[in-house]
Length: 231
Figure 1: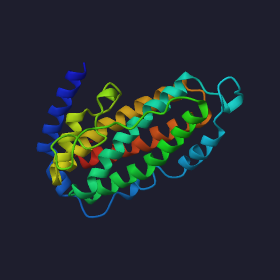
Figure 2: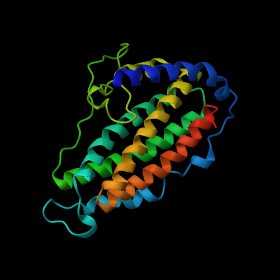
Figure 3: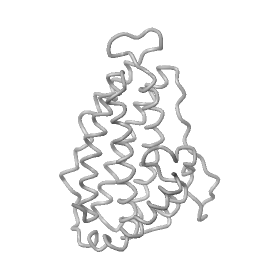
């Protein structure tokens, strides 16, 4: 199934590059103000709640957590890390002010969320996912350091190493179209994971963060699809 998904994604990337790049070129200079504050506000309370983490076997009320809460944090941390890797490429590769602005907002929102979820796992005595590693040397045509994602490729919306290497090697309008197409899939995966936490999680701050992710990333999906020329 992963090979089918990968081939389907690459076909979509090629098609999107051919059909949507001119729409990005037509976009104006500033960022989309409608998405500027999508991540701000609710995350502060979720981050502050990290201190409310409790140890297994001594949990009551909103401090209690279950296996789904652990799975949510352990899955969303590497998912967010990959989004940050993608977003950080935009600064010196993008030809679109809108894409650069979106990437900056993604980084601003998701970096603190990683810290919050790391705090929960530490408080619960659970393993915190290690950052992905790569043996790529500077200037090589291999994936960027930290872009070995083979261990997480089955996670919804995650790119594999080849996807990330292709994004790293692209620039200008081709980068913008590839970035948006890949980030749409990435956001859809995050929304799916957050939906599972909403339905099955127990820890109130984790469920609140899942709500924030669904709201903010759905708004960004609308923004990205608009930039790609989709209804």
